[in-house]
Length: 235
Image 1 (cartoon, one colour):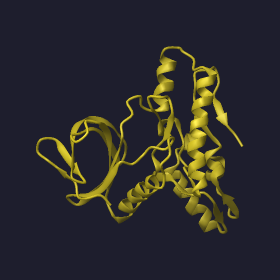
Image 2 (cartoon, rainbow, N blue to C red):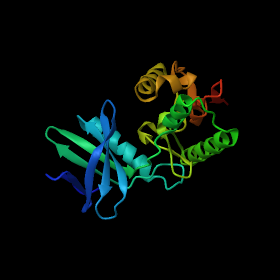
Image 3 (cartoon, rainbow, N blue to C red):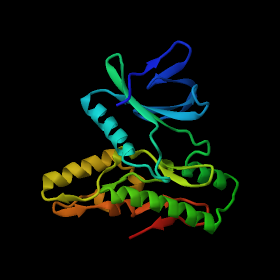
Image 4 (cartoon, rainbow, N blue to C red):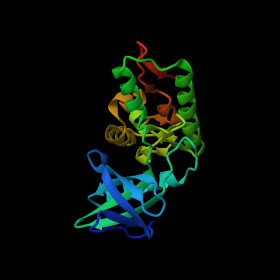
């Protein structure tokens, strides 16, 4: 794990002996928020994701996300640049330093097009889908599934390449369910970790004897383009 972090009085943080200037807040969710920071050693911008951890279970979940990032060096999966767990009073925060991509998410791109009443060319749609599939293939080849693939979890870089992010919901791709208790455990987990509008049907009502696998990543509405219809990936 990364060395201890400190927040200095001049609005900087230190990660692994490298200082970063806090710029402004990029966004926040229920238990995390993201700040834009600048590396004083290299002049680059980064996104610092802070996950609030109330207890040991939260810390383990945050470290799971770190471990998932560290599995990959792939052009279609967001790279983790540094990380650490810092104590903040009675709580902890897991800090993940990630590349900052100024273009934002695929969802933001789609919303921008919609606001302009514009269309995305078919060639671009296919190129983005291809990149998403390459990222998924890398995840599946490691024996994992993303489980929460959606347009807000896909970033676009300057070359229009998609990068998968938010790997905290990843788990082993193949799960054999052999009892009602196991089925309910998986169903409850999916209700907490998999966005309802993109959740695969088999995760809503998990059968007592079944196999859940990486196909949950394939049955998902990846893109909502302004094309007069929704594009789906289906098995």
